Length: 363
Image (cartoon, rainbow, N blue to C red; front, side, top):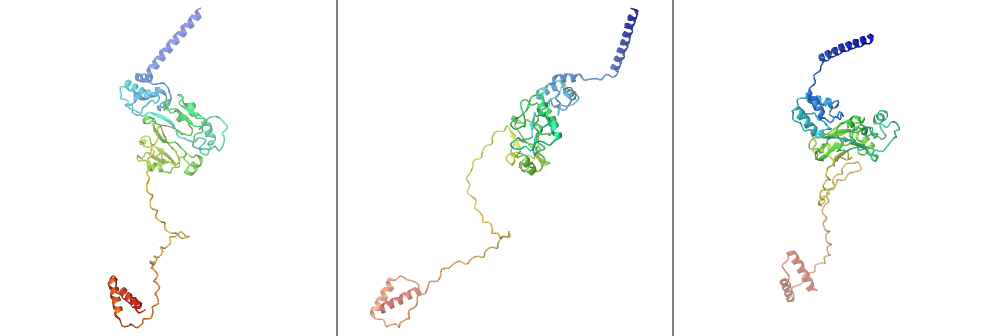
């Protein structure tokens, strides 16, 4: 009995000494934590998705407390409502941030991107991306095995069985960025939702040259620079054979969309364009092209032709003049009558008439 009592007393003393030592060490190495961190952490949705750029909601709360302003800090899951509560806890003004949504930048469905091989392996995009370039000629497009679907905790992205491409539900998407990190081809991007949920972007990430990209996919961007020249806000840049629309500069004027020859630019949730009335215009006069020789050199201009003149009438054979006969009284009367009735004509014509009358009278 004494041995048991002694053992209990010994263990109790050792425990008490250990507790005192631990308390002293804890006080020595105590790290002060702002109580507001816990308050902010309670306000956050506790999704721990990492969409804010910090390791979980606790890390985001710590960053909010330490920051002098909330500019650049945003909880994509909670949105503006949660950020307003965070600002009230910290006594700061909330900075409005444009809501974002995940966008799939690939249109390579089975119709526009024919298959060239067949993958028979683990159903994972990450595994497939490390083993081969893909089942089509485009090595930059979507593999279609659904890693983005598995990574989404909000059931906001699904695979379309017809096109074989992922589709994002705008209402459910919180822009947490989990699908962006899960995609090994980096075809998913977080972009601004835009006013009335309207947005415009280049739905292609193929960096091959135009001819190669178009051969692999008919919807591929060929870097023709037409959209860049058409944009009045300098919002489109072309780098590595691919066009990109800057979210901050784009005003959603949609002038770039109709000039894209392949349809790589996508405009979502916009009203249909109004058709312009067709105006009947008079056809423009066609200017004749200069004649070209077989060698490709322009022919010398032809010399102007002389104006055609009527051929001179054949002269009648002149009858030999007969000796004039002395005028009789009858001849004088006839000549006077002819002169009175005949209108005045040039002298040459009158002379010829006179001679004919004289010949007729003589006959």
